Image (cartoon, rainbow, N blue to C red; front, side, top):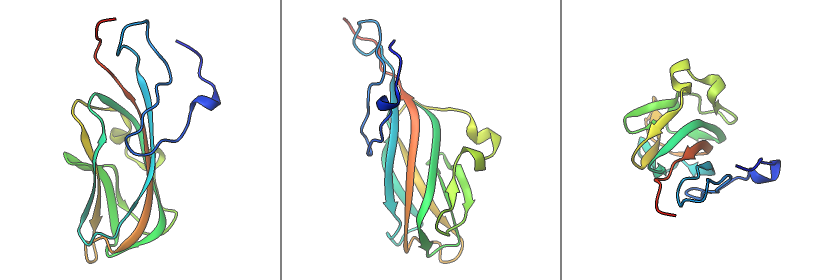
Amino acid sequence: MRNLGIGDIRAYGLGEISALFGGGGRKGDGSLIVLGNTTVTTNNGTDTHTVASFFPANFLVLWVCARVDTIITGCTSWSIGVTADTDRYGTGLAVAATTVAAPSTLAADSLSPRWYTAATDLLFTAAGGGVVWTTGVIYYKAIGIQFNALTAA
């Protein structure tokens, strides 16, 4: 394994992956560090915005955060999570610009790493008020480790 420098950590768009350290010569035995980094515009007129397969299969989520860049209208609060746990990474979040959902704002049980064996959607869910997304922009990212199956050398 090689040492990582600050130049090795870069921001990636949805679905992009960077191999930051490798294994011992067999295909697939290296782990991948993933950093998702993008925005969602919350104007679809429904109560949920889905980022399909945001977490790839065999992925260990270490950290998810989100920040309201442009005030959200159409609801009075929102949550971020996955289908099986729609508020896993934040709930009752304010709609004001600069509102943050990050590890420092979550309950202790939300901070433990989460393993996804299958590709998993990331959900943003509107709550209160008209309970729909009308306007707003949320910046979000996730950091984790992608594990690949071992294959022949």
